Image 1 (cartoon, rainbow, N blue to C red):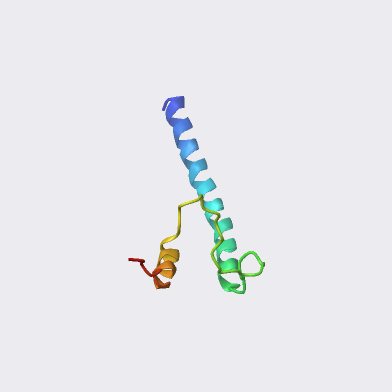
Image 2 (cartoon, helix red, strand yellow; image 1 turned 45 degrees about the vertical axis):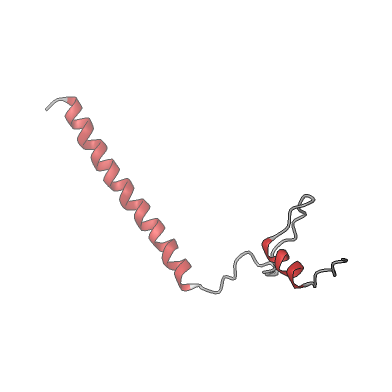
Length: 78
């Protein structure tokens, strides 16, 4: 056999051994994290209100348009 074939076989064996060790080490961490479901996220206070964004003049949000429609129209002078 040539040295190229021997090198390829040794690299293949090293690859299989490396993948085996990586799989066994990460499997232990994955199983440990699955059993502990008490994590609430980042631990901060949860604020579900949307942010107030300052829009340029003349631009309104679609839901703000409905509020303006509720106001009665000013009377027309004849």
